[in-house]
Each structure stands twice: as structure tokens, then as C-alpha cells.
Amino acid sequence: MTTEPVLATSYLGLPLSGPVIASAGPLTRTVDSLLSLQEAGAAAVVLPSLFEEDVLAEELRLVDAMEAGDDFAEFTAGPLPTIELPELGADRHLRLLERAKAALDIPVIGSLNATRHGSWERYATMMAAAGADALELNLYTVAADPTESAAEVEARQLEVISSVRASLDIPLAVKLSPYYSSFAQFAGATSRAGADGLVVFNRFYAPDIDLEGLAVTPRLALSGSADLRIALRWLSILRAQLPSTGLAATGGVHGWEDVAKALLVGADVACTTAAVIQDGPAAITAMLAGLRNWLAEHDYASVDQLRGSMSAASVPDPSLYERSQYREIVTS
Image (cartoon, rainbow, N blue to C red; front, side, top):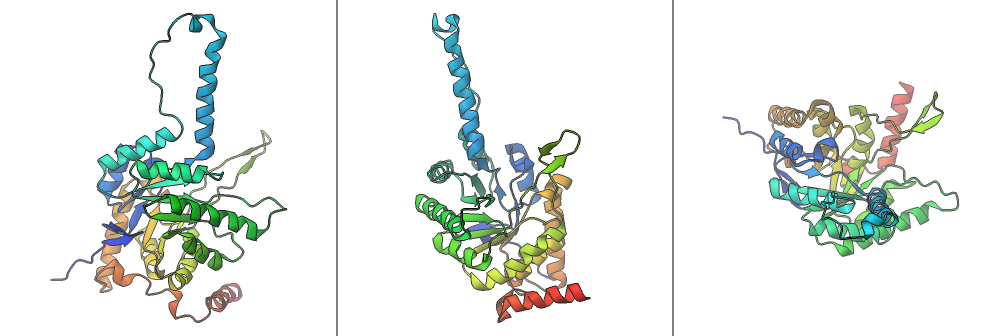
């Protein structure tokens, strides 16, 4: 009788039932949908990012509304009635985190996207206190200041990572874009600054132009499996260079084939959002079933045995190898 392959693994030191994580998206916004993701086989969930700008805007709107009452005599003539205030700002994210931790049996990872020094550490500490099993820093910035060098941009981001790491006692992952002049160097620097794991890659949702309204407008374009290829290239290179750093693939994980490829090049886990948006939690169930069948057909006992078997560890100079691949595609 053939033994069923073991899908259990770990990421950021967290034991996981499998290698597929539900990353931040519409289905990680409520406890009910989080439970559905867990039931479908998600090994962990990443909650929607806490954006500093949204938190501040909500809190300012509340202050404005309360101060508006000073202009009306009826509000100052007697005691105000007790009212229930909605969960605003950071509280909304913290309450979701607390409820998710109470309801789920799988790790709950918080996500944070701030802009100012002090805010990163403050919100990170609050999310850890609310029960997050790990924290994902989302370094989503566009380096558009012509007076600021690449080295200055990177130094500022590394300082953020180091400061947040010093304020936490839970695992810390950093979600990066591929747009660094020397990505391998920066990836190593993030690890030395305190990142326990890297999530590759963040997607920049570039705006579009409304030709009728002559306005810049945000448009969501979901990823496809082809978008995963850049991440696969870098996961393969980073697995050899950062053997003790957790690695997560994201942006283009739509089927079990994508999960298998990510594991082959060295990822610890594959994160999916678009597939769940399109097909619901069942997309994760299908990924795990397909991966399990493929592992059995190819005589792999576990995902840990599979991991990194096609990384660039055996390639003396990954840059020359990648250039040869590029040349073959262009000239074929």
C-alpha cells in the first residue's frame, strides 16, 4: 500500500498543515470567510493590511464629527446620550485579529503597511499584543524622489525592518517588490536586519486613465500563473543564498502546478489570493489535492523532500545561467 505524501511543513518557524497560505484579500476580512478558508485546507491566513493612511483618516473623521457638535447649543445644554462608536482605525484590524485567533486553529498572520518612523513599531506592537502568530511588513513604496538615491531608499527600509524586529517577539516576514537595483544584495540585507522570512513578490497595482472623465483611476488586474515566473527565478537564487530564511511565493499561484513549482525552486509556502477571489476557498482544496497526487506519482514522500530540488544551489553563477535562458528565449 502506497503511503500518502506528507504535506505538513513549516514557515517562519510556524508548524503548518500544508504549503498553501491564503494571503490578504476579500476572503480574509471576516471570521466566517476565514473559517471557510481553513476548512478548505489553508495552512495559515494573512489578514488585510493595516494601512496607516486609512487609520489616520478614519480617526480624523471621528474627531471632526465630535467637534462639530460644539456649534449646536442643544449639544452643550445637557449631557450627551451614550452611543456605540463603530470600530475605527487600528481598532477594526485589531478586533478582527482577536476574533480570528479565537475562532481559527491555524496561524493568523497580521499585515502592516505604514509610512512614518514610529508608526511601524507602534502598530506592529499592537498587532502582536492582539495575538498575531507572525507579522508581514508590506514595503509598498514607489521611489519617485529624484533627489534620493537607491542606497538611501534601501537604508530607510532596512532601518524600518530593524526597528520593528526589535519591538517584536513573534516571527517577522517582509513582503518585497522586485524593483531593487541589486535584489540579491537587498534580500540578504533584510535577513540581516531581522527578517525571518521574505514574501516575493508584491504587485504594484498601476492606475489607468479614464479617457472620458480625464481622470487617473485605480484598476484591479488579477494575477495569472505567468506572473509567478519572476518569483520562481528569485526564489531559486535566494534559496541557495539564504538557506535559513523563510521564503514565500506570491503573485500568480493559481493551481497545484504553481505550488509544486514554487516548492521545487525552494519556497517554503505558496500564497494565493486571486485564485480564491475567482473560485472561492475550493481553489485551495484543489491545489492540495493536485499537489498530493503529483507527489505520489513522482515518489515524493513529502513536500519537505521536494523543496529546493531545482534551486540554483548547484549553479556557480546564477546571473550567467539566467542570461543564457533569456538568450535562448529571445533567439528561438
